[in-house]
Amino acid sequence: SGLWPAFPFRASATTSLVYCSVGSGSPASARRAPMASGGGYAWALAAGLNAALAAISAKFFAPTLLKYGMVILFNVTMWGCYVNSLKALSSLQATVTNFAANFISSGLAGYFLFQEPLPSKWFAGASLIILGVFILSKSSIEEKVNSD
Image (tube, rainbow, N blue to C red; front, side):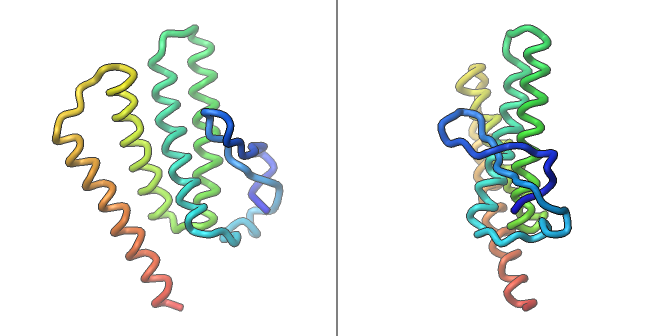
């Protein structure tokens, strides 16, 4: 069960690209498909990683057409993963997790690939973002349990 047939991705753990598994179905049946919330977080993390990969691919020295192609590929993949995360998580959980993964993976890629400095303030901010993700995630889950 999945979303629209317009997302023809399949899961593959053997590649560095994070492909999203989306089947065919109707938008109405895709609102909250049964999926463990852990799977939703994996989709949101994959979306954040693909967003970072899109930015990274734009910075490498390569032919312009290849750069644009990689940026488009990573962004389309990111959206497929993000949409899948919304099937299992609230929009707040999915968005904040996606943002945190994008921020942290972009910062680490800048450090390792482009020798950009990471000051202690960056690590403090990254730690606060991760803490915020956990707090928002826990409070969102408790609200759903209490409202049932």
